[in-house]
Image (tube, rainbow, N blue to C red; front, side, top):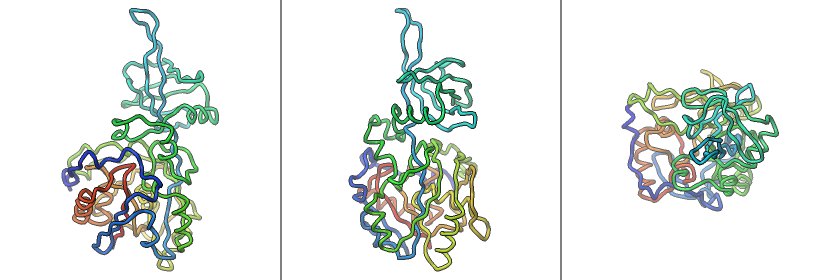
Length: 349
């Protein structure tokens, strides 16, 4: 299939810049057996059976966008120049891979100064990114990032407004546990304690996996033949207890529903030809039409960007023609798109 097959026109007003409040007030498009139904996230229990299992991603988004300055000499004397840093991935050395704006202005060995005396030294430049060595490490660095950083909102939101303190709540799941993501598992942002309690009372079981979502999730596909696209790698973990829970559910006929494409990709990456196995490490699995699913029966997900790998994943799950129909319906019915937008619940045959 070609990249152009996954393009569609979206009105600018359809792009959400704030989430629904409360979370359950987001609209929900339900699809099963070639039938589309419009509803709300707060009514999720109507679409699950007792014995179904939801799988959630318990990664925690860090406020990875930092604003600092570099010292420079001007015609008027010493001055400060603004530098924006977006943390991407911690290294085993304790250093961080990061995006810097403007990268070309930073010299190797130069320090970037942040609030409270925190500094970062540019150690290396690789493929448009920098390797930064901070003046503190471990818990001390985490505390500085949490205090001074902003949530790394997607580019299409950041272009319209700056991140604020409310985003530290809105751009985080209510069950976030293991820090490491620099983008949110956005389908999970629709669920709060009220909805989770209702689902459990309804007999829906819940399991957790961890996948630290990277900034690469926003990278565009640049090849026309989508099979040639190379996915970014992300670290994930599927525990033995989660494997056992999923296998037990499937053994008695329950359905496995991934909340978010991150969960779906991780579980399918951990699946073997005949069974699901524990997993820990990086995965760059790319799911597009023709993929054979081994674990997942359904997917709760947001409405995705044109020409994105996430859109290709949804097409693999329900079929390209069904995808086109659903997205046309969503546009006509004024669903809100992308990270802070509305949700869909999709079941494959």
